[in-house]
Length: 101
Image (cartoon, rainbow, N blue to C red; front, side, top):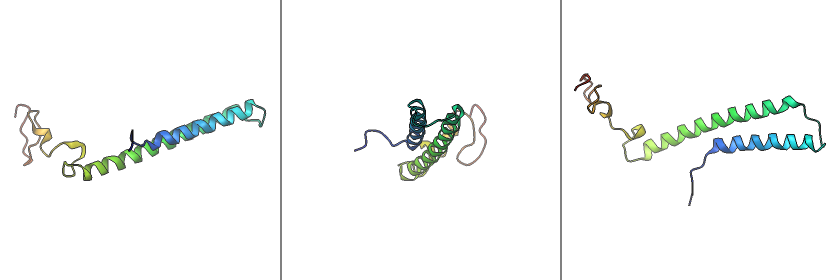
């Protein structure tokens, strides 16, 4: 049983931050010599990959929720006439109702 949903973007970000920490620790311990600017590409690439991974996972999660959920394939759980419920907008037939309905 899952206690929380899997967030692959956080996993990728954490992996790159651990890599940056190991690189810094190895330099501080005298195992190797790392230039000061080497951390910048490691962290930036990690954050970019984490963002891309999170966006892809979110898109997949939304698509699955839309097709497997009980809303008949609508995204966000809103029906076809959600914009026409007293706030103006187009009705289910496509006619414009105006701001007062």
